[in-house]
Image 1: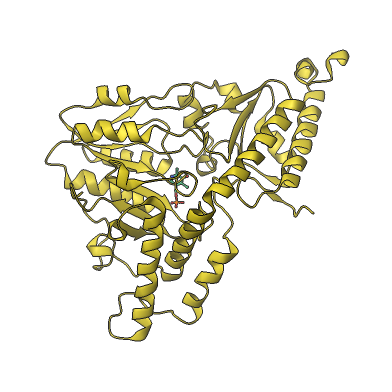
Image 2 (image 1 turned 180 degrees about the horizontal axis):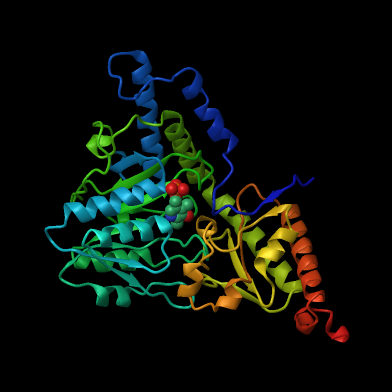
Length: 399
Ligand SMILES: *Cc1c(COP(=O)(O)O)cnc(C)c1O
């Protein structure tokens, strides 16, 4: 039994896991203390819950719990990491390197830093959306103080060679930040075995609540310095002022714990569903172009361009399936996706691009319905556009 509408937009956000909600509820109703209240039981309970969540988050990415700073989400973590590191290291240089395909959280923060006198290089990517370690190395100058490259792209799902990229930075003693919002909980991450100085991630992309996130900041060898971006209290070792979102953090911790135990099984199932969706669609519709890397991609992502089909018209005709044309975060603007531009998709094909984000709550029935519906609607859109009819399998005779 399918429950409509079908949610296939799991890169934008995810449904809260029922186990996460259950863990959170007592922190609204019973243990509602302020984690900074040191003088009574309510405060102690809240503080203990936050410290337990810190351990759960740390375990998922294999780092020290004290290296986790809780924030309101990845956008805040990225702002704190980039502005904080740039300000703290401004005496050493003013050059920052990032890529053309970053999330707006990184790109807009870099724009802000540019307006404050920092120079930013935006590295190009290849046709699959990959940043090459050689290109990074060549872009480094004596003025470079910080590099920020996302681990997994939120539109096309490409997984960057983060190990190699961070290694280039370690050799040159340059801080390396990664926006791992789409990687955490989906790929095994072992920070203890890597040379990452700063890493941003978020709760609501991994079946936790919205409004909670984390910045990993390496505490030792070398200790990474950043300046706080909020004034108003000594919370999170003075790096993030403001009363902690205890229920959100508890939920985030639980989501991390679940991701840790269920990752292998969930990812295997998600991969199967994604492959089922892709083969089903290419079985019915010709001229589908897969965007992103054929292998080095996150399991839940399917980003395709269907020649001659206007993706917005297609999306409107399949209202009972929630998908996205391009990045949801930039969909409020009319600008075509900067990620598709960076991988060389022409403007016409960009408008024919649709992103499916498969998640752990999706079922094979939902995928089959989606294949059927999309194929049917594409056939319809082609039928009112006769010259392109040859794109349809089985319709050759009528062309
Ligand atoms: C969703 C997302 C963000 C923003 O995260 P929030 O927690 O919503 O602020 C940043 N980067 C990437 C890659 C994302 O997918």
